[in-house]
Image 1 (cartoon, rainbow, N blue to C red):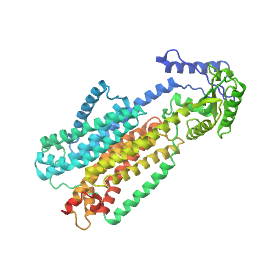
Image 2 (image 1 turned 45 degrees about the vertical axis):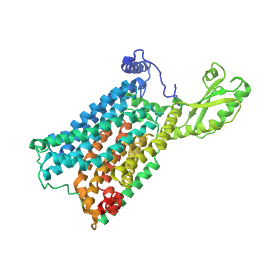
Image 3 (image 1 turned 180 degrees about the vertical axis):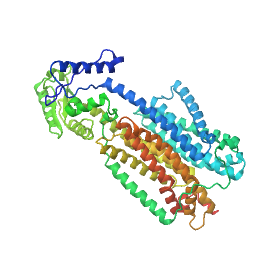
Image 4 (image 1 turned 90 degrees about the horizontal axis):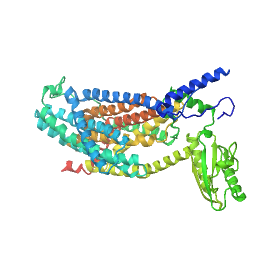
Length: 601
């Protein structure tokens, strides 16, 4: 292949030994360079790329990225757990429960897979571990902190463990039920076995970690919670001052709600103007041989020439070579060429440099058209153009053709996007929201308990997607089309957890002073002092884990890290110290109707 300007060319080859394809490809590059120089040509650039090169480089850099993420994922939770809980042994308690739950859920899934009931993919196995770790830290830490608060008062570890479990149960029940629902609704995407597998396997892991948190954690606290070595180097003392936080007044609450509105407006603008690309080159590790060669190829050769759009047709009678049929093929090609952005349509009517027979099937009844477009087929503009081509082809009416189909890499990627968006926004999203609202309402016996968390989650989600689209854009990198789909489940899961933890404590504090003037503001302030530092700490653990992705070798991984870390962090802050405390303080007892009727009796 020669460039349009005639100043560059491409050699296509396939190494014989696949096991050494990477080394062989680099050797061929060296031979080509030496040969050109030997004959008096001094090229400004010679590079090599392709499936073998990129695959090996992505494998190498991917291993480094995973190692970095794992290191941060291990160090950050340990440090934050030590700060939140205090005591080396006590801080390690959640990790013991997590380990047991992973073993239990893995054993259950192993048996179910052997029986052919579920299919366990590599992706679902990875999510099983990460989800167990994240939720296990949430559930167990919440109980441990409540125990630490009560042991100083009751002095009896058994009573303190019982009290901690009883008062933590509503929040953990609400959080776990919404977590299970959030993953289980993915079974509705039965057209995509990968997502369906996640929907069948991860809920089992959540139930296992829930069981460990509600049994193993309280049991160890009851047994060892009064031992000095358990909390070393700290001690559990009566009258220990809670986190100071801040005092909520009506003016501050209104200010915090206005701040949420501003953040929501910014996020909504970013989400509504989001234009995702299908350019998967963002997953190529930067600075590698294959990446540089691919970029050079993109800049030198028309992208549409490398990845043309295809139209495959079948004639209803006669053969492709019949004059009437060929005339209709020409008219169809002219219709397509009239679409802005289409450079050329090749086929049996206009074969270009190829023999026209190559565009016709062996039965002489099928044919294909090769459509060269101006924008990159996998860019947002390219995918939109492919949609226009598809619409024009489907609208074309002629008795000559039995059927006309559109294909190619861009068309396939476009249809995957359409199908996945349809499954997500029309099935997974609405069903999940309704069931989560119902779960929160039943757990807290309040119709508002499911609405308030969804507001914080929606704002955090929109901010995460906005950051992931705008920041790469500053560096000229496109945002991936599936970022909104991957961000929402993660933000939804932790958002429900953190809102549940704060709301449970606010309801408890409000029940103590219900009916008093300003009770809502006092209860929200006390809840901030008691648990907001825990919620923020747990949120920072997840944020730090996702932030490690920003250190990845490719922009695709970095974009995921920005979206997930940004969304989780904003949702955490809104749930712990901004929107949820503010709205609950203003609404007072009304926020807990019909549960609040108990306080009046």
